Length: 283
Length: 273
Image (cartoon, rainbow over all chains, first blue to last red; front, side, top):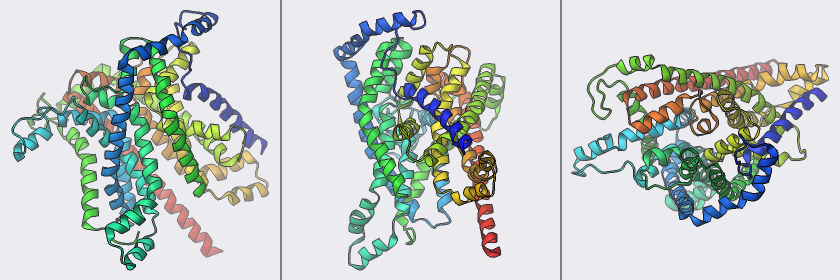
């Protein structure tokens, strides 16, 4: 028994230590650690650490990026919920023998590369892309629309990429729903739409909340979608951080950006984890 | 819910799946396009696949990606399974909630944060960046997914089986390998597949943690995509999609089969008892 518990414990402890350093970005920006000795680095941190934050407040690029990211994440979470809810609802009402198959079909795109799926949209949304061709052919528009490199394209990409994250928790909440409750509501003379709002929707709320967090938190820091689908005008913090890091090679600023981003996200993350813990206790 | 689907349900599910799959299908179809222009269809051809096989840079990147994927999936499966067992079994230990938080945080944390912080960690420890730092980073984030998958299986695990083995004098280690592991194996396998595919297509974390000389396929694809859409990339993406799809289908069939076998064994046991 001792070996059985002790060895995993040791390893787990080791992981937990390495993860503390990983999960929270070291709040100490690294100044030339590669060249300086440890002692020098530490003393430099003491001298310089607030400068980068002061720099962040002087340039409005950063807070515009933060606000923009939050707005984009919020709006796209709402759209994803609106799109995902009917899908999850339809899946939960499907025949029992069909459900594993449908579930599999939602999960499959989630396993295929994120990058590839975003990339696929470039071809569709571009000026000579499929969407414009179809719209022109249908006669809806007579000039090709400029969709790629706009915020609209970013929204499309986000909703598309994060749809499975929304559908899966919604589905698992809706699937557990007790059909007799709805029947009772109907027997008591409740019209279907009212039954939906008063019975189905409140009961699916845990799924709604979990889905929204699963979409909102990663989208705030999203990099690939705004970079590939959005134009230079689409400011999102993930992209700012990336540019700061890879183009400007300004590591301290990049770290400061990350720390603030994490600070913004820590509240939703904590709420999400409490939610998860509660869901597990219910099991 | 026992009421059958309505037309509205059928339509919404169909449209939803069309939305999910149409871009992928288009990508695959256009990878067989004869012409250079991705937007204009000029007949079937497999020449871009041929061109891909001659592109040494892409082949190297693919080889790096596969090696990173195999190593990190295996390591993260071992570590993730251990973490899951500890979380489910150990009850309350000091720092348990912190630990379980750490296991689930990377699932939602933006990748840029994780990538940057891992990089800063490697720099702080003075690791030279390249293949191994990328592999380590992949182990870190895929481990969490494995832990979650295995944990959900362990929650429904019947502990009396283990207790019976222990009562009959089986040593704990042997009990683990002959009772516990076979029973949670489907979850462990699907955890491995999940870790492998996640590692296969990670771009952001790899970009941060890799160094000169170790370019993974997503990094390569990304840098090419920024230059413009090309049918060669379509072909590369199609191959990746095919690998992942086959892997996922095999994993799910595997899980289904072992589930059926388990149910049959249970029925037999019930009939015999």
